[in-house]
Image (cartoon, rainbow, N blue to C red; front, side, top):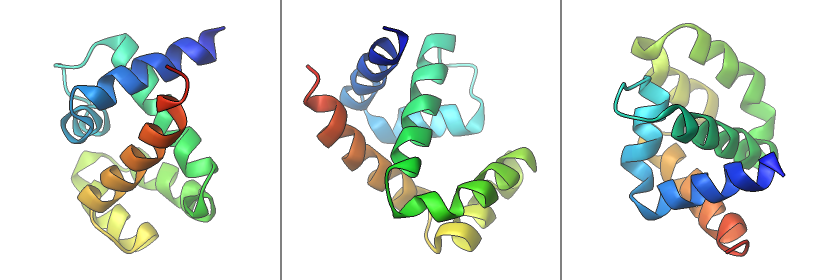
Length: 102
């Protein structure tokens, strides 16, 4: 199934260095492959919807639509933390959930 493939690709990205891979996806870097972008985006959304971050998800999407220059402000406003804390939290979730699929 496609979801399993996304999870496996996201976990592979986590193994390669989640902080840099997630930052590339959030920043729209041209260094990330389309498959990597889809997998990381899927994993970020799944982790947010499966945790206490769920409440802030609509504001997260709104912040993303404002563009990358507002991203750090959005993390502070919506999640009361930094981009790094957000990435670390989602990375921990991905390691726990997707690591079991291997």
